[in-house]
Length: 384
Image (cartoon, rainbow, N blue to C red; front, top):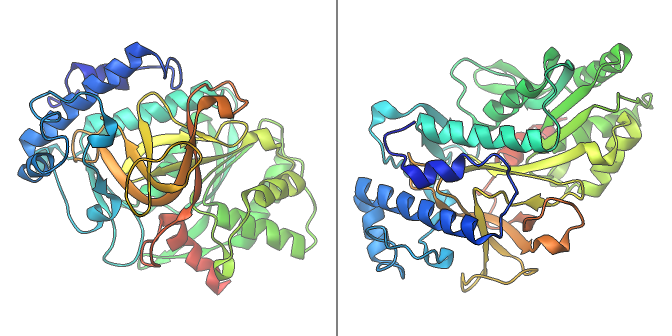
């Protein structure tokens, strides 16, 4: 464990059940205590963050461990800030992993993780996959990854994540849809992806499809145009996606349409099709329930801020998504204001058994330069 991690942060991030007791007074107190420690950690390490606290509305609450738990007063940092500035609360020699987002050249977020932070985030993914029963060490799978083919020293966060997700079921065969063609360039191999599906269907073992949804949609669209056979992949197959739903010619893809196409052409039931939300600036995993809502795990909290006033909004109203968690000790990214538009809802608004609030993503605000990894990747589709 990092020397920078104190008892409350460690205790919060060690919780095994990702959704249990979210609303309890004990959990609320623990989250406040962990946030207080995190704020103090970064305040002491970074003059920049100390000044940010001094000039915020919570200057008397957030310094010297006196944070009182009011999430609305915690100063947030814009996600785009990390595209232009590299901040470290730890010595450079303690950087364990360096990940970037993909975006317009010169606008890549640079995130640095100590061992504690990245391993804490990984364990959270482990626990959510365990919660949903997706860890199957005795059941080998074939994989189709709509993700970047790995390179040596590849730092792109999405490539790292998608390959990391292959550990939850033993790997028999892996096909990458985004082939590296040299000089950092990639090509979408849609025909190879269709061929892999045909071979996997013949083999008859579960298939796990991971990665950018726009490429999966394009492959299914090609299958329809080519009058391809419809496949019935094994019932234990799983589709786990991540990224925006922008496709060819910048068309917006309906999630409902995509999921219906997966059921029609691959035979994977709706309940085994899930989306994940996250970013290199905030690695807490938000994963859809069976009703396709992004529930908030106990290790984080979410606020929605008004587009004009930036005041926190009540449930059901759309605004900027703010993600809060004390898990990260290497960079002051405990409270990040995203460019994504979202709204939040209480747990009672969903019929599933998760029992925590959830949020719905409505799109991305701003100009075209504010691109996500998925949007940057999907630009390859313009040449298909």
